Image (cartoon, helix red, strand yellow):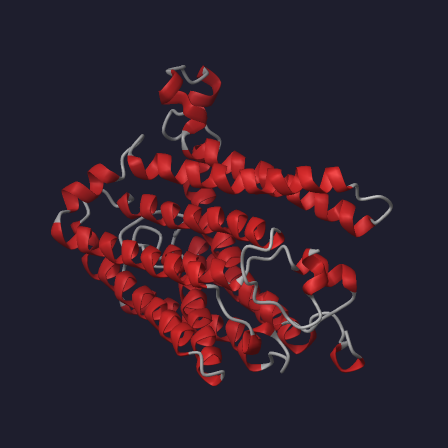
Length: 374
C-alpha cells in the first residue's frame, strides 16, 4: 500500500456511521422507554402494521436516522475504494436477480392466494427445509476454510489465529441457526420436547429461539439484516488501515452478499411497527441506491440497472405487504419468507467467501488488499 493510501482505521465514513449509530440507539432507547411507560407498548411484539399519525411519525424518524447512518458511507468513500472501482461477477448478478424475482413472487402470492401463502409457511414445508439446507451449506464452506487454515498452520501469526477463530465461529453459528430453524430435526426424528423446555417454549418445540419468540426474531432480523445489507457498504467505504484491520475486514460480507440479500428487507408486516425493523429496511434501500449511484459514476450500466432493480423491488414488495398484509390469514405468515431470504443471504455469504478464497469469483476489493485472500 502506498503512502497516499495509508490512512487511520476507518476514517470519516466509519466515524460518521459510528456517531449516527450511537445517536440513533440513544434516541430509540428514549422513545422505547416513553412508549413502554406512557403508551403501554412492549418494545418487541408482533401485530398488524399501523398507519395512524403517531406511527407514521415514527416511520419518518426511522427514515431520517437511516439517512444519517448510510449517508456518511456513500458521501465520504475514499477515491480508491472498491465502491468506486469494483464490480460484481456475472454469477452473483444472476443470483441477485432471481432472488429478487422470488421476492416479487411472494408479493404476487399474497395478492393471489393468502391461503396458499399460509400453507407454504407452515412447519416442515419446503421453505423451512430449504432455509436449513442453505445455512448448512454456508456452514460447510466455513468448515472447509477452517480445515484449510489448520492444514496450512497459523504459526505465530496472531492475526491468522484470530481468522481461524472467526471461521470456526461462523461455521458453528450458521449450523446452530440451521438446527434452530428445524427445531433440531424434532419432527423428522419424532422425539418429544423435554417437559422443562416445553413449558417455557412459546410453541412447545425443542428449540431456544421460541423461549422468547418476539425478542429473538427482532434481534435476528435486525442484527443479521445489518450484517448482510449494511456491513458490505461499510467494508467498501472505510479507509484502509494496518494489515490486521484489512484482514479482519475481509470477513465482512461483500457487495454480492448485499445484492443477493436485498429481499430480506422487504417482506415485513407483523414486525413493521418496530423501529429497528424499519431502520433495517430503509438502510437496505439506501445502500442499494448508493451502489447504483456508484455504478453509474463508473459507467457500469449492468450493475447500475441491477441495484436500481433491487431498490425498486424493496419499495414495491414492502409496499404490497404493508398495503395488503391484512389479507394474510395469520399475522406472522410473512416471517417465514423473511427468514428464507435471510438464509439465502447467509448461505451465499459462506459460498462467496469460499469462492473468493479459491479464486472462483471476482471480489470487490479496495486497492492494496489483495493479500488478504492469499
